[in-house]
Length: 293
Image 1 (tube, helix red, strand yellow):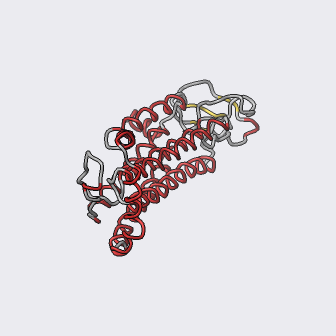
Image 2 (tube, rainbow, N blue to C red):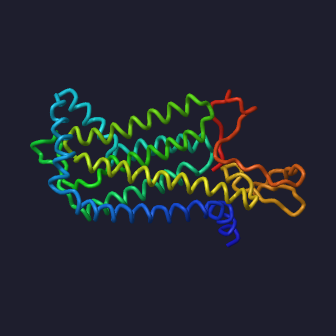
Image 3 (cartoon, one colour):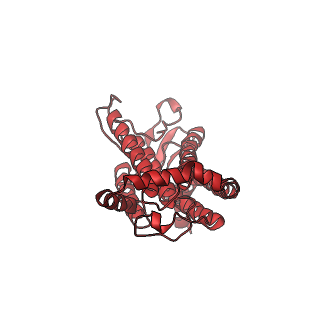
């Protein structure tokens, strides 16, 4: 029994604030998706289609040729139900190895779960028909059109991964590269759905907006997690080597892993890592390092 309690103290309690904020935020995003679906079904009529969706589809058709169609089909498959989980798993495992924390698994897994649920509920509630097969590039899809699941899920997963990479890598060019490549990937994934005639432009826009809103909430949850740990003087977030740090009444910092106690300078609260590790002198010479959870 004590073993179970120790594990809860080491891993569940330190992340309680993070989980709570993500649960509340996820509920809010799902609610927004449902409310947006209700409003969407009321305001997007034939006039709305004529002003945006139909011109976007007609312009996409004018750009098609066999080579471009094949490339766009291969690219859009990366954001599908098979490609995106594989890509997300590889990048998440890589970041977990680099950071030596559970943070990538917690954030990416929780974010993807909510985005998938929002996509499923939105499609079932609206039930919007996709563009006709005569206007689309095969293979055809038959599920409801609103919102674009490829766009929503890609925005969420890649958005959270960009945030994690910016925490992990300290060199400015690495962060700029992650943001640039990730943004291009998100935008291109949405536009590929319109280009292939698998979604209307407004389906893709809804995916972008909902996805960005949820990514913002996930980032907020992670930042609040560190703020609360600082307020509680709980020390850095847990890592694989140091699951949790405690401070006794004498001001000596102890690690539950059984390593030697470390003196706390002047009895001041231990330094809290806000997510990005500081290697060396902070001059940016070190490209990456283990960041707090």
